[in-house]
Image (cartoon, rainbow over the protein chains, first blue to last red):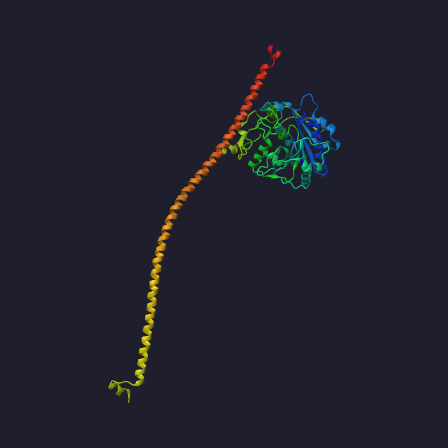
Length: 325
Length: 136
């Protein structure tokens, strides 16, 4: 699409069978969302971050180009992140995937006016798509959406809005509420590019957890006086065996740590101030083809193992402010 | 008979007598009216006196009430000051809690970093020695 993107979709994943057959589920969801967005002529780009690819398996980027209809190839750029970043960045060796670090890589490289960080199992609802098509989003805000979980085992091979909107296919869930509108925030965080830049993306300092980093972003936004709003339309979530709602009751402690890292941390009270080169800004880029870029490992892109002054109380957005109070 | 001769005899003309009688009657009536007004004024005076006493009593009660409220205001000021100190203390507790949680988070990060470094050191030790380094 030649016109500049109105919306950047930031996604992360890898070819690792996360939550069962990850790849086909991801492709179906991506195709559904792209079909609906392009049908409404919403200029869109996808920033897929393939974080720490699984050794011995084809790249997700390669499989995507093989599977995705060619008319959408130009919309998708994949950043393949060298596994050494996961290795040296993690402060919790048992945590296998620094999801929000990966999302920051995509956010940092997005060119859309608005950026939506979402997940590979999240479908945009009809109402939400219609709303996006109206071009009424206001910069300087963080938009949240209610997530509707689809019943586990629902056939996702031929999803339509009729199936999605049918309450019989839904699992009841508590709606999001002010002030933070938290709850499955990782599935839908939408803001303009400048706001993401100002907030410097998701927490890159507390690299021990995966769970709660999205919530922590909302706390950071609120502490920085960025209004948070319910966009007023839902997204749908395809339930799978590693969905937190499903797996939290069945995962062993080791599995839980590998999936989500530390769970009981101060995500509600303590925030962060990422370094200027957040999102691996200094990682050297090596194009693998027109649509795929490898981020090569370079220590210059890696923040220090600990930088304690970047951990601040909520309400104080920068270390200087934290010291002053 | 002329008035001069009557006067000499100690007599007056009938008309004069009648006039004098009229004047006397008018004076009498005037005196009676004044008497009525006097009584009314006396009554008024009594009434005002009574009202004055009543107002004085009320004033006394009000003064008592005022003193009571003055005392209460003093107590209220003391309570206000206490409340202010309490609010301040609460803010300090919140601030201290925030610092404590930030400190706890920093400790998490330090612990994580130490674990990572420990792991790396152990891995280095477990790796076979590089033969090239033996030559040096």
